[in-house]
Image 1 (cartoon, helix red, strand yellow):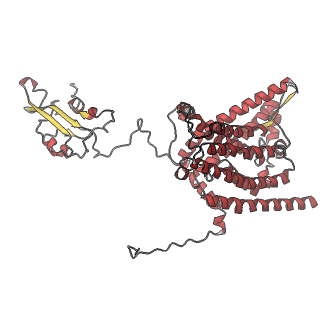
Image 2 (cartoon, rainbow over the protein chains, first blue to last red):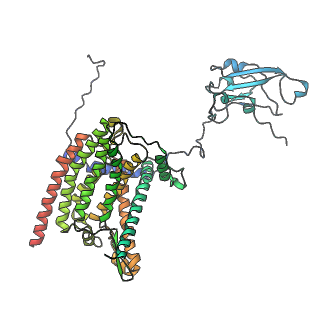
Length: 166
Length: 345
């Protein structure tokens, strides 16, 4: 077969010198290298107890935000679901009743808001698409689970905890 | 032979047996810890404080595993193999002097099970028998890979036993005795044999690595070439016995090296300690020193394992037959000449 490139490097295997055939100097050198690692700091992070620090632009679990009065910001416009390349977001919109004014900021709100965490690719496009600044991927790593159905996160898991009134 | 003698030996045997099993058990833990520390990791640290209970968990796991005996294996030999490996590993401890004699009342209790006058030959015989466990296991499995591995182990052991024996002959020229007890007594204080036989010691330690099937000579175990090794077909505690026997072998050969070349229970300043510490504590301090030497050797075994890549099989044979054996013969000749000159003048 013709060589595919014009580059050529001839590897010449030189016979070992006497010192090299003794092995022992090389072994002593290797042993000194490995023993030096005995005194180095270990690189391990004991995961559940210790966690690696995330970068500031890390995208973790979604959270649906509330405004400064504790009302849900989401207006169920559906732009996040539309922008989602993995089609992970589904929602059902509902109209706000007069007595629910303290709960929802806009006249329309998401009665059901579900994200399938197995579909989500954490690209952050929903975050960018949202006109109401209602969704952010600022949570921790999504925990593992056993059943597929348990990865569909509803509002119970997504909506931010209500502000504590002082 | 009075009854106290029997009781005394029985207690000694039990203690030594228990100690060697515990040390072998914790060698598995130490191996993983040393490996981890040399690679900037932590090692097992979940089971108990610092992972100290890890060997127990491993043992429990071994017992809980399903026991499989291949249909076409020769069942009797298949079962004998691991037991033989374990037995030959354990009986080597019988002739090793663990300390100088303790005086209790008017009774002198030697810390050695049997002070036979051919102690070195006994050790040598037991070490050679060790390969039978591997051979029988590999052959009885009725598996090509296991058999190949067993053959590897056998030819490796035979090759390195010669160089080992020759290095011991040079040592015998210096000591003039085959009794391990006497060899240790000669190395009183710091007159350790390694100072008189440095080349012999290097040959002996290299051969010990080969005899115990440790890296860089761990060719009988090879996942890529042999699937597993001579214990491919083994499971449950039978596999555990093979792995365990390897660590006991390591412990015994460390003890032999410490006895033959590093003065056993002797240490500089031991006379002063013996006078001041009394007839029971004094010898026991010597035993502690002896065990510290053994642990140093065990650490060295592990340290080497995580440093040096293994030899190829032809390189292994090349090193054994063309490297170590001529070197050992040269060592005998040089030692003989030097001794002759010293005696002449």
